Length: 205
Image (cartoon, rainbow, N blue to C red):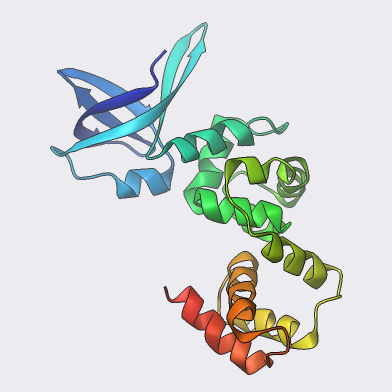
């Protein structure tokens, strides 16, 4: 089994990179995000590898970090999610953002991935919510805030601030995370305009 490859980028395909390792060219399938972040042809790089062995083929999947590879494995524990869909999810959400989206029940963020409809997104969120903390640090305050917003229990300034950030084009998960961070510095009684200003500062980092 191959767990890691270190070599020279030879060329790119639509969903793969050919990595030259001491004269042997390995075809490694990657998420769009990983492909975009690889160096140019002729430069050195290394990838964590997941090896799929079937009767009729051997396929390599590459990741820039072990965390991304662990998420690739975890996503496929959900019925209806294969390697292609898992890569699609990782193409639109980095591991920290994916962890937050699942922890907060943000089905809309997950559903942005190619091949993931509303029903599958709901299943992913439901089945992986309890497993997320083991794969990435998720702020308990952020989860609590998200649940309060979903159940209509959050104070009006918080709801208004999140809504304002969403209207500015940010994803629900991003907006909730930014407002949760803003609350830590501004305090529970902060007005919506203060939370919006601090939230935008968080998002600009």
